[in-house]
Amino acid sequence: MSILQQHQVKGLEIKTKDGRWMEIDPFPSSFIIMAGEAFMAWTNGRIEAPHHRVIMPGNAERYSVGLFTFIWDLLIQVPEELVDVEHPLQFKPFDHHKFHQFHTTEEGMRSKCAIKSYCGV
Image (cartoon, one colour):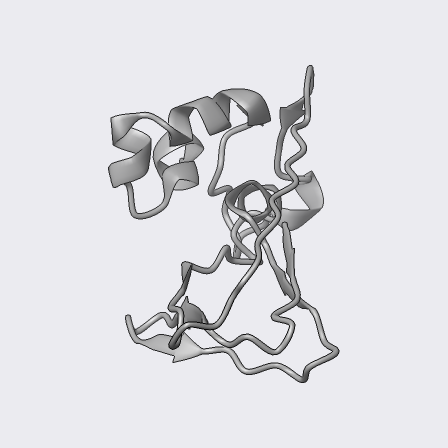
């Protein structure tokens, strides 16, 4: 999960389902929350991980800090309450750390959705 604060420097874009890039222009004091691919798998695809990028306008300075956590010694799996006839199981249980290792492989980087390539049903 990503928590972003633009700090009045625009540039964040999210790719829509039809393939267009849409600029995100939040209120100055707001935060943007984006689900990651592991969260998408855990929710059985009910919450999607958006493709996003930053396009820097002009010479404005923009700072980024990445803080990452991993779930160790536990398989992430879709809760049974999120699987039914209308929402069949989309992801097999997976090891979060091994998924991140896969994400850095050539196959993982080429994939449109690494989590689907790694543990999709």
